[in-house]
Structure formats: C-alpha cells, structure tokens
Image 1 (cartoon, rainbow, N blue to C red):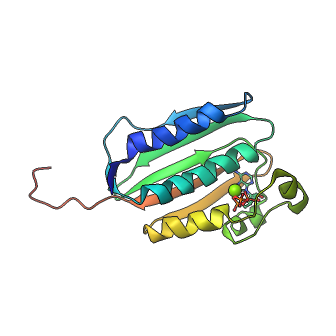
Image 2: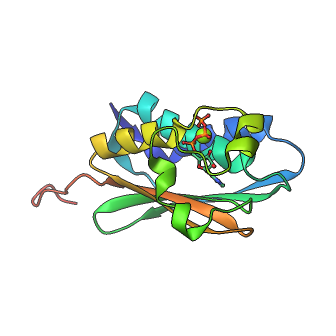
Length: 158
Ligand code: ATP
Ligand code: MG
C-alpha cells in the first residue's frame, strides 16, 4: 500500500529503541518530510528489523546506531550505521549469501541462521532496489539499501 515512509521508519526505530540494551544509543538522521511510496510494509519492516537486530547483535561494546534516510534524485537511500565488530574486507560481500556467517563459533553463540541478510536482499530486489555493506574491521558497519522513488509525471502541478 502507499505509505508515508518517514513515520513508518520512525515507528520501527521507536520499537528498537524501547527494547535496546543500556550500552547502545540510537541516533536518527531522517528528514522532516512526506515521502509517499508504494511498499509491502510487512516485507520492508522485515528488512529493517534484520539490519537493526544485526547492528545490535554485532555491537558487543555498544556505541551508537545511526538510522539515516536520504532522499536522492530517483531513489530513497536508507543506511544503518553501527560501531560494532566490523567485517573484514574480503568477507563483506558474502554476508548476503544464504547461511553465510563471518565467525562461525561466535555467531553460533549469538544465535541465528545466517539467513537474515539473504532474505533482506531478496525483498529489496523484489522492490527494484539495491542493498550493500561497507565495513571496517573493528570500527563498524554500514548497511545501505535503496528503493526507487515514484516518478513524478509532468502536468500534475507539482
Ligand atoms: P539471522 O539473521 O538469520 O538470525 P545472522 O545474523 O547470522 O542470522 P545475517 O543477518 O544474514 O545472519 O548476517 C550474516 C552474517 O554477517 C552474520 O553472521 C555476521 O557475521 C555478519 N554481519 C551482519 N551484520 C553485521 C554487522 N552489523 N556487524 C558485523 N557483522 C555483521
Ligand atoms: Mg541477522
């Protein structure tokens, strides 16, 4: 359905902020705007939930998790920036593969199946978007995804 994604994203971050541990803080960089988009809201909620739970799960020392939304020319860009463990350069693209987990022993302790990001990728791509990761080992990770903005037709007065 068509939704204003700005309050939609705020609601998801609210829910995480309510249940976070004390050593983590959230920062929002979300424009005060109205951005109407056609989305499968359940599916995009699943994507954001996966990325935010990873950011918390793989930030054992805590730090800040920044939720950033940018309106670009033809797309909306959402980034979740953490200050956690980070991922080695040669492994960073593999995290979207099914069942791939960077550190098997550590990951087993933390729980999970290694499917979260593979499912997220499928959902984002089914919305004609892209998802990728940038990371510095020991510094943190940024997961970004984009979703195409609706094309404005000429002559509608906007
Ligand atoms: P699941 O999501 O199924 O519960 P998972 O979290 O292990 O399990 P993914 O979400 O697909 O699976 O992530 C794959 C792997 O990528 C993780 O096991 C972890 O090693 C690495 N990873 C993902 N997000 C981060 C992050 N923010 N910081 C560091 N490593 C990450
Ligand atoms: Mg996960």
